[in-house]
Amino acid sequence: MRAANGAPERSEDMKVFIAGGRGRVGSRLADTLEAEGIEVVSGGLEDGIDVISGKGLAEALVGIDTIVNVLNTPRFDAEGAVSFFEGSIDTLTAEGVRAGVRHHIVLSIVGVGEGDASEVGYYLGKVAQERALRSAPIPATIVRATQFQSYIPVLIDQHTVDGKVLAPRSYIQPVALDEVVDLLAEAVTMPEPGSEVEIAGPDRFFHDDLFRATLAHRGDPREVVTVDGEGPVGAMVPRGAHRKGTVRYPITGIPTA
Ligand SMILES: NC(=O)c1ccc[n+]([C@@H]2O[C@H](COP(=O)([O-])OP(=O)(O)OC[C@H]3O[C@@H](n4cnc5c(N)ncnc54)[C@H](OP(=O)(O)O)[C@@H]3O)[C@@H](O)[C@H]2O)c1
Image (cartoon, rainbow, N blue to C red; front, side):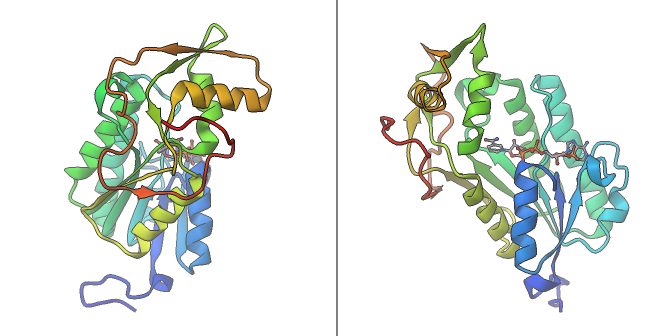
C-alpha cells in the first residue's frame, strides 16, 4: 500500500537496493531488513552489477524506494578513492532518478575531512562521496560511524610500517558493527531525508593504548610506537550530538581517554 506521494506505508511494501549488499556491512543489513519483511536487492559485482559503469543497475533499480550505499574500494590513494566514491554516487543518482528512487542513504566515517584526516587519500574519497550525495537531486541521509570494533586488527595492519605499529596519541571510539547496522535500518524504515547522524562506541581510547591492548590480547608481538598526530586529538570522534552504542570493546582494562 502506498501513500498519496507514492511512498510505501508499511515496511513490508518497501523495496531496498543495497549497493555493496554482500560486503561486511551490506550482508548484515540485508539480513536485518529481510527479517523486518523488507524486500532487498543486493547490488555488488558478484550480483552482476557495477556501480561505476552502471552495468545491470537500471534493471536492479526497478521499483526501488531506497538505496543504501555501503560500497567500498581497496583504493586508498586519493585519486582512486575519490574517483570510486564520487563516480558511484553519480551513477547511482543518474539511474536512481530514472527509476524514481526516493531516498539515498550513505554510510560514511566520523571525522572525515577533519584535521589531519583530510590528508588521508581514502578519507578524501569519503569527503567527495558526501559532497556528491549532498548536491544530488535524490533526498539523502548520511550516517557516519566511527571505526568498527571488528576492524581494529585491520587498522593495526594499516598502521604497520617495517614491522612496527605507528599509532597516534589521538582519540578513537570504536563501535560494534551490529549497532551501525541497526542505525542504517532505522534510516530505511523511519526516513528523515536530509539528516546527518553519527554513531560511536561507548568508550573513548587513545589509538596507541587500544592497539597495544589488542595486540597483547592476540599474542601478537608487534611493537606499538606512539607518534605525534599533526591534527586535533579528537578529529576522528564525534564532536556534537551522536548516538552512543552500548556494546563495549571486547577487551577490558584499556585506559579510557
Ligand atoms: N571499516 C570501518 O571501521 C568503517 C567505519 C565507518 C564506515 N565504514 C564504511 O562502511 C562502508 C562499507 O564497508 P565494508 O567494510 O562493508 O565494505 P566491504 O566489505 O569491502 O564491501 C564492499 C562492497 O562494495 C562492493 N563493490 C565494490 N566495487 C563495486 C562496484 N564497482 N560495483 C558494485 N559493487 C561494488 C563489493 O561487491 P563485491 O563483493 O561483489 O565485489 C562489496 O559488496 C565503506 O564505505 C566504509 O567507508 C567503515
